[in-house]
Amino acid sequence: MLMRSKNTQNNLPRVNKRRLLQTPRGMKDILPEDFLYYDYLLQTAKKTLEFYNFRRCEPPILEKADLYNKGIGSNTDIVEKEMYTLKTKEEGEFLALRPEYTAGIVRAYVENGMFNWPQPVKLYSFGPVFRHEKPQAGRYRQFYQLNIESLGDSSPALDAEIILAAKVFLENLGFNHNELEISINSIGCHKCRPIYIRALTKYYQQHLKDICTDCKKRLKTNPLRILDCKNAKCKNVKEKAPNFLDFLCDDCRNHFKNVLDILDSLGISYVLDKTLVRGLDYYTRTVFEIKKKDKAGDLALAGGGRYDYLVKLLGGLDRPAVGVAFGVERIVDELKLMKKKLEYPKPKVFLIQIGDAAKKQAFILLEKLRKANISVESNLEKDNIKSQIKNADRVGALYSLILGQQEVLDGMIIIKDMVSGLQETIPFDRIIDELKKHLKETI
RNA sequence: GUGGCUAUGGUGUAAUGGUUAGCACGGCAGUCUGUGGAACUGUCAGUGAGGGUUCGAAUCCCUCUAGUCACCCCA
Image 1 (cartoon, chains in turn orange, purple):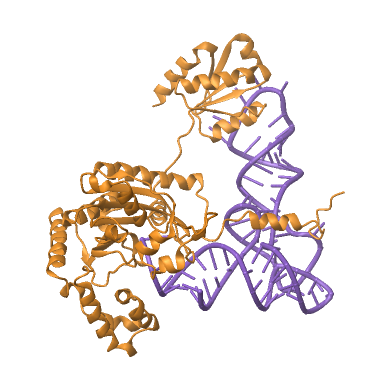
Image 2 (cartoon, rainbow, N blue to C red):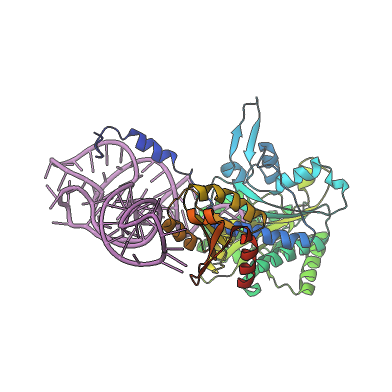
């Protein structure tokens, strides 16, 4: 006899099973209920962005690791610490799970000769990206991004268009325009940025004793990032730090001014944020974030900017570009908090069968109904009427069809109104007409 | 990567270091081979994993795992 006690030596399989039946850290299942939100987001993106003439383009999840090393910058955290790289069976081949979309999109732009298409090339993407970070709420190692890019043109109009499209998309999802805040800044170009960084570094070196250890580190590795330090200790120093806007070259200043002018004329409000810099090396000129304002602290829903050197850096022609990425999980969480109700469609009709003869007919009838575009569900594995009718109730069917021994013999079928409980017996071959009639009445 | 907090069936929870880990929801089945939302009965399923202290551990200690919060970073 088998002992149920935990003390039997037979507990090895149980242990292995536990380990096996667990997602890797930071990974999660998207359950049917959650997928409604992902789907809603993608549908809304499709509707909004295609109306603005963006076209969907999906690069592969795996790319050569060097694409990101070069594109994002090999000394960024994303590449240095967070990228999933893997060696394949091919000698010397290193691939990476994409940590973001832009590098892959730029590769696709060059590889497919999109620089010969009418410029700009406007693309959007939706899918999972991977970063090996310590997970937190709304922050996973596999997470989804919605990505929008406009490649091949340096006009400030395109910066503005990306920001506009991003904002309209969020509003179409259900965000209220006055709870969204756009912060914007310019981080210059190859000409003016080095000058600014020199000024910034010099300034901070004079205040070394007043800044946190992280900032001391940043001063060496990535001075720009010093500006978004949240440590209270650095607050004073930071406030008096030189402002990038005073160091922009004429071209960059004009470009930035133009972007802001267009936003103004569109009536899009924004906040100039001189501390806004971004963590990826490829950004130039305009950088921005779209946040949801919250008493407890703002939540960045999207971030983006211009990257005028990336195409060339990766070996293409000298083509400027601008783009934005949305954090899908964060948006999904917000939609849930906003009590946005989403549901799968319910079957209108439930077919109940009792007995072998009825079961045989039931298969045929189900497909007949579906071909007539009537959504129908059934429990062909069950035999008694009670549990089937219970199920009909649970799935929310408006009508049940009851097909038993007697009905099969008589060539009849019972149609039951699940709300009123009323039922009538009708000839079997009139089902579709009768159902359509009834369903029409309920709509 | 650094630090804090947490961990009991699928879900929500109970158990001064001391019986067989209790309850609710849920799933399945039955009461009930011809009628649902109810009731009752049965049943499924748990101390995250490993080690230690102890006569005895869900409870105390250590390690790991996972979650969560802050930092780092970022969407």
